[in-house]
Amino acid sequence: MKVLWLTLLMLVLLLAGPAFVIASGTVTLGPAWVSADRGPAGLAPDPATVREPVVQVYAARAVSWRGAFGVHPWFAVKPEGAAHYTVYEVIGWRLYRGLPVLAISHRAPDGRWFGAAPVVLAELRGDAAAAAIPKIDAAARAYPYADRYRVWPGPNSNTFAAWVGRAVPELRLDLPATALGKDYLGTGLFARAPSGTGWQVSLFGVAGILLAAEEGLEVNLLGLTIGVQPSTLSVKLPGLGVLPARTRGTVTATATDEVG
Image (cartoon, rainbow, N blue to C red; front, side, top):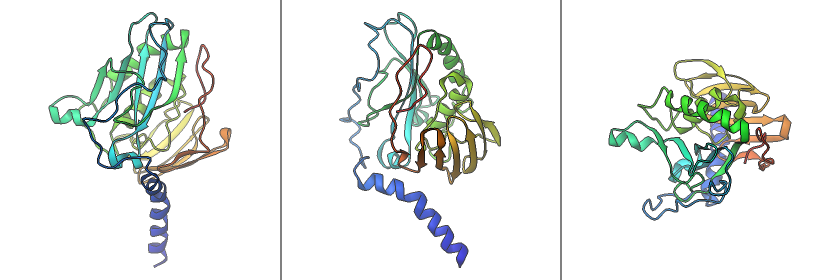
């Protein structure tokens, strides 16, 4: 009986955050796909006026009920003097059309994800961005799960973001607690943390632990993340993300160490 009560308590704690997100109206259930806003949020430097190379990593709440648990991430890159950005992301419904889930496009780099405003998770400018862009392209094209997609526990769009982050450690990519699927390692048990500043162990993305200088300490239970980040005196909770919320630091010629 005690085990049953402890199990129920754990489930309540894990689901309290997502339940609050739904109750607060942060996500909208049953979105109007056709009318949903996909316009830019004004976070990407205008390539018409900014010639230097730019790399930005974004995340926005996922569509419908999924947004209570997780986010959809993507990478936007602009080489020096380019007239547009290239966006790399994984989109599950492409499978229904017989396409690989990896999508490479020139859509708005900071476009809203079906109404959900994005935040910047990481950013590089100048020489650091120029060096990272070909690494991002190569890692994205080498993504091992381009022919499959599973919302839980992965592989999904956050699995992709973690894969690219490990291949480009200069991003120091600290994926939020709401990046459901970031801990999916396939049949592997050990891997570098997505930020490249530590290590993690994960059992099929359902249970595991991560310890890194950038992410702090994270515990993965049923695919949901609970953690502490001593460097910023913050906690990570399922559905809610990082508390207190942080703002991204000033962009330098190398990288920013803060996340949106």
